Image (cartoon, helix red, strand yellow):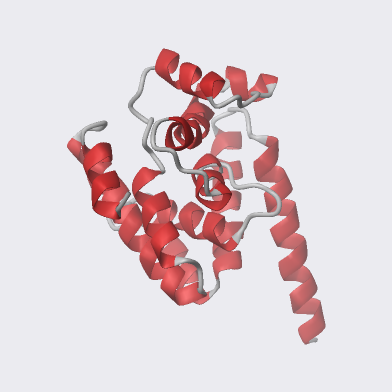
Length: 195
């Protein structure tokens, strides 16, 4: 399928505000992919599809997850806010026939991040944070970091997520902690080598 065909499918699945966000994430993903050397076509496709099931019912999301054979951890099962990323990954496999693991993982981990993220996963994770319509406190700082260093932006995004969820006393996905520690350690090691 072409990007335009995916865009058409997604446009029918969500309200105009979310559709605008999805198009903006695809556009930002293309920009970041070009800047950092990720596959531009995959970035655009993962960007438009990343929130494919965000407005789907919990029942539909769970059915997609089960059809794709994805096993949820107890924390994932009890944290409904995590479902749309997992069910979105299931949707693109089951309904759209996408088999590329990099696109599937970029969608699945776009909210939590994880240890061992691919370049495409990092691009989608950050494009979701920095898309044109985003206006949260700190978005300008995030955009500046994203333009300077993708790994530093990933660390900033994970820091933001951890702090925000902790402040609201909500559960934090272990994937986020593992990803944060990995990127933090990697950046600290690079800094030591410079000295």
